[in-house]
Image (cartoon, rainbow, N blue to C red):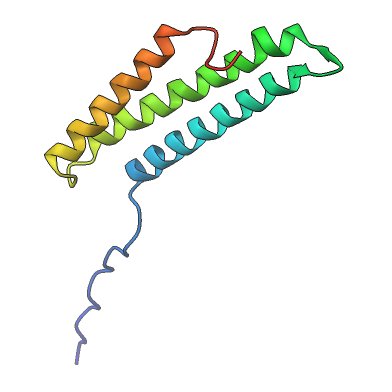
Length: 111
């Protein structure tokens, strides 16, 4: 007598790859923003200013972090269909404001 085959494996509860990429982009963007701020603050120490850290490396890291943050927010607003329409609109407005902050001050926020 033949047995029936087992039921197909059900997908477990977890994050999809798109959600994982969104979380990674936003998290890495915030981390790089914080690291860039620390680099700028390390360059402006009381013993002497390090111009390369203050005017070059800190703002580069901060701007790259902000671009990742903006990209992650836009990706979240575009790809996550399970979010409410107003949440997606809020994410697009938030990304637009963050993009304006990047464009308005290309040397970074804090130096």
